[in-house]
Image 1 (cartoon, rainbow, N blue to C red):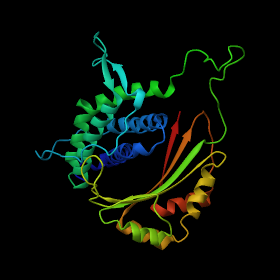
Image 2: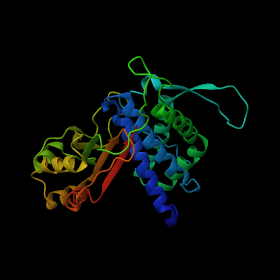
Image 3: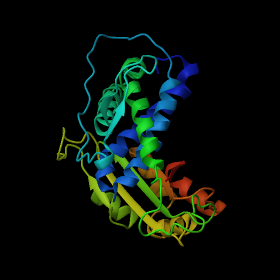
Image 4: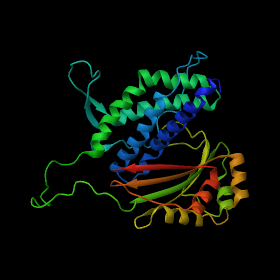
Length: 307
């Protein structure tokens, strides 16, 4: 990497956050409701802002104009929560103007994609300059405006009882403890020459979704890489441990040698996503299950989404 070695960790953290954000937008249409999109959008955007603020300030290496892959496919937006009010400068007494969460996310996505394309082509310092400059002057503004609106959209409640609520007796404001409401565990295998049929045969299970490099999207340019994805999900009373065991049982033909062969050729990623509707939700995973999950791709990503 052409950035200073002491900044490698910050750059790697930003690349991971940027890919998570773009993946969220690429797959948002598969989420079952707006509430889940709001929660996941807030989670991904908050990580992205934190990582962006830690990026180093570097000099641009070339005068090349960076080009991204365009807009995400089937981006559904945020429905009734899309429009909000904001001011351009919080230190100036000025009239509010309308903002759009969907437009904010699209602007951020395009800025990130340009840098990701350059980064994957080996132009690391130009990518970091692109991300840092536009964090300070463009996508960062959209991000912090959107976060304020997302926070309100995710946490707002009605100010009084509805017709179906009794006006007498205590009202439950917050629930704590209990089971994780929903868990999703997935394995993604990505690369320019992914053979989905061969992977399904090797692992003994069909993909829950898949695509090939060059495959057209409904919106935007063709896909740069192929992808084979398999997901298992479960809701309470099944917790993360039970879902993980079901996930591992669904891959009967996979062994260490199979995963090693796939890792040598493609990028593998195991993700555990948990959705909570209350505070202090706890879960436990045994060492055996964690080792088996980590043995697939070398690590496990945990994402926790709260109402």
